[in-house]
Image 1 (tube, helix red, strand yellow):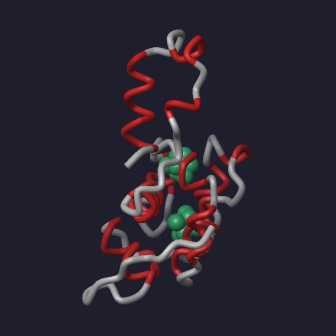
Image 2 (tube, protein in one colour):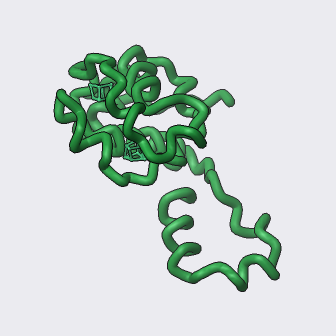
Length: 134
Ligand code: SF4
Ligand code: SF4
C-alpha cells in the first residue's frame, strides 16, 4: 500500500518521525531478538517485533503494511525484557498513528455483520475502535 508520509522540520526522515511519535530512541535497538522471543502474539504476526524495530530504524516504510503494527497488544512483556530499555509497543503505536493520521482505518465497523456485533462486548468494540480507527 502506498502512503505519503507527512514529515516535518524536526522529523525529516521516517526514522525520526517514529522516534518523535513514540518517544523511543529506536536506533538503540541492538537486534538481540529478546522482544520477539517473549512476545505472546508472535505466532500471529507477519513480522516479528524485532523486525518491526529494524525496519523502523532503517526507514523502511513498508513496515506500515505489517499486521504486527495492529496486533501488538501493548502487553509490555518485551519492554520489561529489552536490554536497551526500549518500549516496542510505543513504536507500534507510533506506526499506527502514522497510518491513522492519513485516515486509513484498520477496522470497518460496518463490515461486521449486525448479528455478530450485538454479541460482542461493548468494551471490546470501544477498545477496538479506539485502537484501530482514526
Ligand atoms: S529486545 Fe530491545 S534491543 Fe532487543 S531486538 Fe527487541 S527492541 Fe531491540
Ligand atoms: S508489547 Fe507488543 S510486541 Fe511487545 S510483547 Fe507485547 S504484544 Fe509483543
